[in-house]
Amino acid sequence: MLISQAKLALALINKKKIRDEESLFVAEGEKLVEEAIKFGEVEFIVYSEDVSAIIDAQKKNIKVYKISSSEMKKLSLVETPQGVLAVCRKTNYKISNLLNLRKPSNPLNSLILLPIEIQDPGNLGTMIRVVDAVGASGIIVSKGTVDPYNPKVVRSTMGSIFRVPIVEIDNLLSVLIGIQDKGYRILGTDLVAKKTHWDIDYKQPTVLLIGNESVGLPSDILKICDDTVKIPIPGKAESLNAAMAASIILYEALRHKIF
Image (cartoon, rainbow, N blue to C red; front, side, top):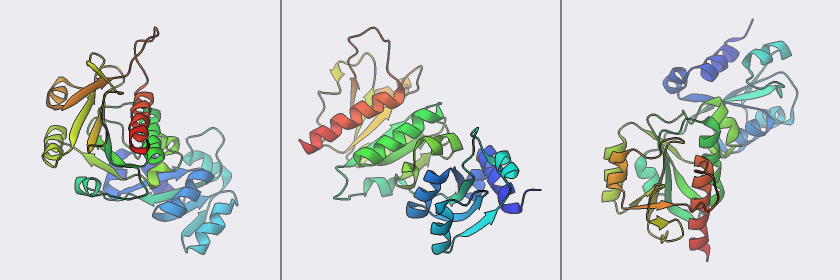
C-alpha cells in the first residue's frame, strides 16, 4: 500500500486540479531531483533506489520516504524508473516580477516569451529550457496552453523549470495591453508577416508571442501586436515546430544583445 506522501505524488502527477490546489508538482528522475534540491523548493522526496540525490536532500533536512520498486513503478511515467522523485512547491511569480526583473547576468532580461495555446508538453518544456539558456526574463503561460507543471513538461525542461520565472494567466488580451502600457513591444509570429526575425531590434523590451502548433496566433491577438515576424523557410517544409521557432528567434535576440 502506498504511503500518504506517495499517494499525494500520484495525485499531483495525474491531476492538474490537485497541482493547482496544492501549489505543488512532481519532478521525477535523478537529474531533475538534483536540480530541484539546488534551485527549487522541495517539500519531500520519495525513492526506491539509493541515489546520491538522497544524501544531498538529507544534508538540507529535506524529508525522504522510501518505497518499494513496485510501488515506484505505479508513480512513474517512464518505462524504466530511476527510483526517485521530488514533490516541489511552485514559485508564485506575477507579471510585475517579470517586468521588473533586471539581472545583469541575464543578457535578455527585458525579453519575455509568451506561448499561446501550445498543446504539446515537449514543445512547452523546450521553450522553458531555451528561455533559461538565453537568459530571458521568463515565460508567461496563457489559458489554453498545456500546464507548465505537467510531469511531461517538467521532464522536458531538464531542470530549467526551477530557474525560469513562470506566470500563469487567464485573460490574455488584457494582460498584453497592460504590458504594452508599461513600454513593452508585443512581437507576434505570423507566416505571412512582411518582416523576418532578422529585421527586428531586440534591444527594446519585448514580449515574444509564439502561436499554436497548427493555427498560429489568434486574429484578435495579431491585431494588437506592435510588429509581426516570420522565419524564412526557403525549403519545402510548410512550417517549423513551435519550440524550434521560439529558439531561433530567442537566439537571434541574444545575438543582437551580445554583438
